[in-house]
Image 1 (cartoon, rainbow, N blue to C red):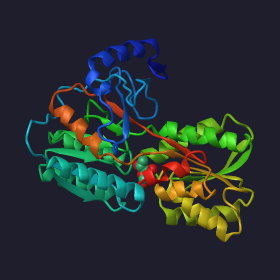
Image 2: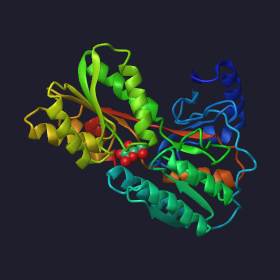
Image 3: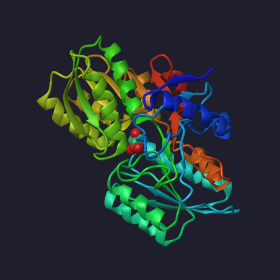
Image 4: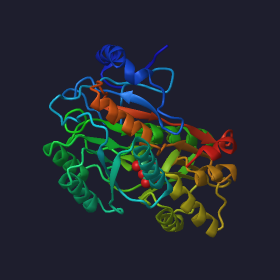
Length: 375
Ligand code: GYE
C-alpha cells in the first residue's frame, strides 16, 4: 500500500518513516483540508542533526491518498503557540507581481477570514531587503505567529533566526531558506511547499520525450537567489546533462514575470536563433517568451517546444491553444494547509519538518478539462 521512494537515509530512513507514519496518523490520514486546498504530502527528517532536510531531496512515502510523510523532530525549545480563540497572524509576502502570488495571498486572506483571525500582511514588492525589515516589523508588532514566503534563500534565513530569538513561531510557506543557515524543526517550525527539484525533473522528462531526446534549449530562470529558481534549475539541468543531444544553450533570469520573460527571450533569441525548445521556470515567463517568439516570426508549439511550471489559467490556456506543450503544477492555494498546520502545532500534534504539496501535470490530454480549475 505504501510506495517507498528513498533518496536519503537508506534503510534507516525507512525504519524512521514507518515509525512516523504510525506516530503521525493524524497528519497522514487527513485528506486535503478543503477541495480548494493544495494536496499535501508531509516530509519529516530522521533527525535535523544528521540529515539535510532541504525541499530538494525528501525521502517520501506515498500514502496512496494525497498525503506523504518524512519523519521529523520539532525541537521542543522552539517558540510555542498558546491556545486562543483568535490569533494575530503575520504573513510576509515577497511581491504581488504575478497571478501565482496573488492567488497565494487571496488563499491566505480567505482562510484567515474564515477562521476569524487577524491577518497582518506585509508585501515586500520584490525587494528582499524590504522583506527582511517586514519580518522585523511583524516581530515588533508582536504577532502571535509568522508565515513567511522568503523571496531569497540566504538573506531571509537571518529574518527566520530573528523571529526565533523573539520567541515567535515561524512557518515557511512556498519558498525555503538556505538550510545551512536555518533548519526546520530547529530554527523554524516547518516548511510547507512543493518539491521544486522534482518539478524541474518532471519538466525535463516531458521535454526529452517531446523532442525525441534532441533539443537546443533556452532556460528562463526565476528570481535569482530564490529556492524555486535554484531547485527548478537543479532538477532540470541535472537530468538534461545526462542526455548528450539535449543541450542548454542559454540560461538566464526572467525574474518570474511576464515582462522580464519577454525581454530576456528577445535578447536570447537574437544571440541563439538555433533554439528549438524553452524551459520556463514559470508560466508567466513562458507567456512572455511566446510574445517574443511570435514578434520574431517564430511558431511556439510548432518549431519551438515549450514546457513550464505553475499551472495558471493563462498558462493552461496556452496549452489549449497549442503554444505551451506541458505545465508542471505548483499550487499557490496555501491558506487551508498553512492554518491547518498552525492549528496542529497549537494542539501539540507532532509535525513533520516538511509538508510537500502534491501537484498535478497538464498537457494537451487534460488542459481543456482542467483550465477552469486553475488560478
Ligand atoms: O512559481 C512563481 C512565483 O515561489 C513557487 O513564485 C513560487 C514561485 C512561482 O512568483 O510564479
